Length: 470
Image 1 (tube, helix red, strand yellow):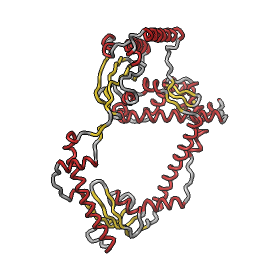
Image 2 (cartoon, helix red, strand yellow; image 1 turned 90 degrees about the horizontal axis):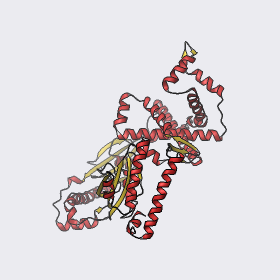
Image 3 (cartoon, rainbow, N blue to C red; image 1 turned 90 degrees about the vertical axis):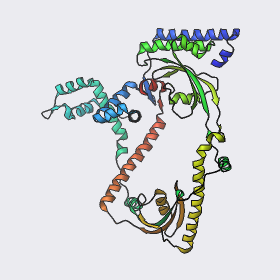
Image 4 (cartoon, rainbow, N blue to C red; image 1 turned 180 degrees about the horizontal axis):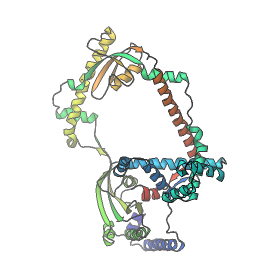
């Protein structure tokens, strides 16, 4: 729409339309200010008909941080991956908790005030000389910044969640035959003989241009689609309402100028905003430009050439994005990739020779069953030989001869006898507990998916980006 208005900016109809749009924006802003709409919603998640606020997220995040060591906390603050993992953990926890509360409500579960009082009196933290101390109770709550009602609500929710989810956390006893089958599969051994034929053992000469061209014809290299973009960015502290409102108005004024036909750079310069053009960004790849987040790059690849985005909110400001040019996917020119083809061609030729040699070994093995020069090993499913050899050993049956490939080598494998493991009661019991824990996870995952179907979960992206994704 922005592109259409720009192209038609000098036409009378377009000027009238732009006046109506600008008046609507001003009217909307004034109405929001007059009626109090400027107070922004801090709803982070909707679970069914229940809302979860940013404050609830922060409370759970603080709780999880308090359970970490100082080193773990420091790592969480400095390592983006660990910080993202904590965010995911908190989002999962508050979502599952609310799903359980929704279910408890629909099932008619109730927790009486008497039950809450009994729970409070049983907390060791609130006891003195073996008895409940009202003074300690008040003192601890005050230092925690909680009211009695806050704490009572927390306890009530915790009890209701346990009522709903408690049965899913009870491990079911795994039948003996299942434990036996898992034990035999994990600890059984197979005797094998295998020969390794490495690609690197074969020498090849330097390729000619004709060799490389023929190889490239069979293995073309694709240059992915890229896009050149430009943007205007208005920096703002999104957590401070006054600054947010001030910068939002500036961003709107820039947007109005662009709609009226001014270039992005002209609008940015007039309002002292940042303007930048970035050449040839690639889908799914990070850029050195800090404004162009993964989400903005994905946005750029959903737009048409010459189009501008709507005014977008980031965690640290506002941005309008434009796709200046689309560079379609295409095959690279031979001369541009010629040097990089040499190594690939050599490996391809070595692989051909290694395949011929391996096939000769397999034919001889099938004919004479001669394993002279082969390596003998007693292996489990996870130990004793390269992984592809282990997979081949346990996929076949005794007496099978197979050839498998693994990156830089072929393996010719002779599968020998199978040896069942000796009974180890300690290992079996440990395996039983492992299987029981797995069964709990399976039940919990299935029940959680059922709850999500009953009470759909929606993340409020703008709130998440403004307050959480920092």
